[in-house]
Image (tube, rainbow, N blue to C red; front, side, top):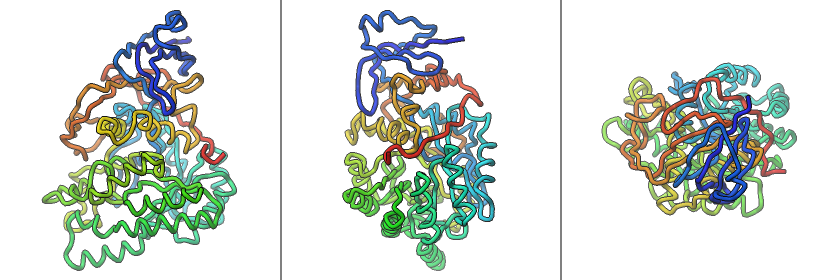
Length: 467
């Protein structure tokens, strides 16, 4: 049965345009846009009509950095693919790119198949995968080529977490050389983990065990140094580079310098670095543990550099690095030793709203909001124009957004499977009202109408900024 949906009367906002237009959807795809009130739009009929008067009509958000069910620090991220994708939908995100994990001593194939199994039949929205490389060797380098052909076109390496995910410079160089040949994109967690481990050991020996010391030992200079080193290794390999969760002014400066040379170097930041700071890590008692993530929160003065980087396009993407751990039973594994606090924050439900608040506050424009949250992540990871825009032929992943509603972010009302909110009590202007995923209503007038298993695995082409 063919179904037609018509979205009427809204302001369609994409990265390129803002137009008062009606949107016609058929069989899960956008088929046409026409000026509201025009003869063309007036002639359209549909099975379902959505009134978007006084609302924005947005492309669904693309969150290119999530960790559902991630094993970390002796526990697992508390959101499953089922709970995490449902929460994403509530927040106006209609596609996630999650990280499949290769374990040391195992093949990439084993890690990827385990993630296919976790996600299959459980997702409320569409999903894709990056691959974490924990063990770079001749066999896994060959596997990279096969994964690119399968639509897994990006690979994450870690300069941090010795003994877990860490790769030394030689392994990083080999993986970069391979990606230069096969078209894959290397994503880098850029922190000098070897040096950080020394500082952790010294801090604990001094009796500095509280959560705030997590931020003090993971120094901004060690993020900048690793970012610089990753850029130089990528230059030697002739490979593009995408630096994840950039948090420090000095690291932004390294990216800006590389981009000024015309190098294919890209950077992502996350809402926690734009809205939170070391003040949160220093909250009394053990409350600071809620905000332990890596890269860590920085002093407030770094925020201005991140906003500036987003305006100047030295940072291109805002993702969440959604990796939630409950305060009770998970974060408290690190009472008396900050190094044992699981690293990660919940955020997949909050990103689109927080970035709309940034529009209201004057940090970015409306179109830039959609660019950094929808269009650029889709292009960066080979999903555009199927995802990230509203145009004929695109998937009908569409958000009806009320820019005038106000809401208070709280663990009491969010849908992420975690017992606290990193933004508890924060008032936001703007709220998701209705969400379509491939034309199907997942959220309808603030009611969840989706289902597990609707979300489909979406293979990706290579980075569309390199063609």
